[in-house]
Amino acid sequence: MGGPRFEPVRTVRAYERIVEQIEEAVESGGLPPGARLPSERELMAQFGVSRSTVREALRVLQSRGLVRSRPGDPNGAEVLPFSPAALHKSMTTLARVDELSLGELVQFRMVLDASANLLAARLRTDAELAEMDAAIGRMREAVGAGYDAFSAADVAFHDAVARASRNKLIQICTDVVRSIVLGLIAGKIAGSDDREALMLQSIRHHEEVLAAVRAGDGPLAARLSRRTMYDYYVGYVPAGERAALRALLE
Amino acid sequence: MGGPRFEPVRTVRAYERIVEQIEEAVESGGLPPGARLPSERELMAQFGVSRSTVREALRVLQSRGLVRSRPGDPNGAEVLPFSPAALHKSMTTLARVDELSLGELVQFRMVLDASANLLAARLRTDAELAEMDAAIGRMREAVGAGYDAFSAADVAFHDAVARASRNKLIQICTDVVRSIVLGLIAGKIAGSDDREALMLQSIRHHEEVLAAVRAGDGPLAARLSRRTMYDYYVGYVPAGERAALRALLE
DNA sequence: CTAGTGCACTGGTCTGACCAGTAGGCTACG
DNA sequence: CGTAGCCTACTGGTCAGACCAGTGCACTAG
Image (tube, rainbow over all chains, first blue to last red; front, side):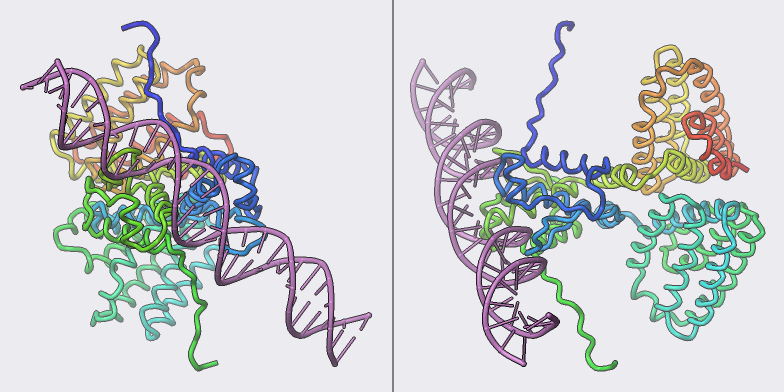
């Protein structure tokens, strides 16, 4: 030992260098959302590579949701505002390939929603309370109108709570995980016979949660929200996984 | 209104179709990790497109962490086991471009870690307890040895807790968010004067958390873990954001 | 039996071309 | 003078064919 410690050289593809440079420019704010990249032919001159290489770099950036290109657009690729689409994609992949069970997903939603409620109870504004109230109103109206309308109102309620938590990470993860869960149980719902009873129960539960948030009782709101979600989804979760969900209920 | 509702046609790029097909094969298990894709020249025959198109598709799949290709490999691209690398990448991007503050990240870690502890207290095995114990032991040894060793032991402890929660989503998000947080505060640490005091306090806190987990008291473990993390990171969080963190402490 | 050498093949990159789109200027018509 | 429509100069999407450096494997010479 001793002497100079050599480290293995990592050959870096040309297109990767391009990705890095553009990514850096976007993330540092040098290329704000809405800005345009030069055209591919221009980029190939600036980077001193061929168009194939430029295009491979753009494909990567595009798959990460950083830019979008449109054929014929004389302005070149457009820098996009961040969207959790890439996050969503990778989490969906995770759910599909890595045996992520419905139980784990619901459990994670319980964790997120409970935390959102805990924070919302302390930080919510009157406008946000009104928003939650309105969402519950729409849930009530949608009982006879079918699952889609009901689910949309339900989503709106939880979104309002997540926003009131003031934590973007909670908002985004809530959004991503929820859409995966809804995708997994889609189709298993329409056939349910006691659907209306479940809706009415869910509305009652949401009202209790909202009351706790309004009263500023975070721990209570968190506990109630876990219970609400458990009752709403437990029917879709395999019996063997339900114990793990119950572990989150005091 | 009425009549047939037309929806805008979405032109689908050729490379996107290829991505979809291969993605589907990977996610459905038709191409398990370790399997090899045909070579690019073979793929271009199978899909009936040019090599550039095949390559753009492979770049996308590669940036999503599904496959890896290596020049000269006579077997073609390799299908990878899922790794949260893509998740990590998009969350890092989120943190950089979307003004994700350190406060939000730490708050999210508190949520995740508390939930992991809550679950771990109910589900942990003796082996996992031993692992946590060993990690605290390494933290103790590392007090004099510098921040890196201490931090590594600390990470090991939280990883053990996350694994004991039996929820992969919690494990992965914990891992991703932690590395972002550590990246953000890297460098602000070495200079700290009261570093050793902070370490000793942290060890004491971890011991209390472990005791609660061992006793099976989930709510207590959750509360203590939030406090532990708050005390450890509050010094790096801007004063204006600390109130939001305290909202998570009862 | 082994050490070494080719060879056939891989992915990475380049060149140059064609096509279908788009935007914006130009023209001819009202 | 105003506008509808065309024209052109671009764009990105795709293709074909080529070269190179690197790899694994079979074959061969010792």
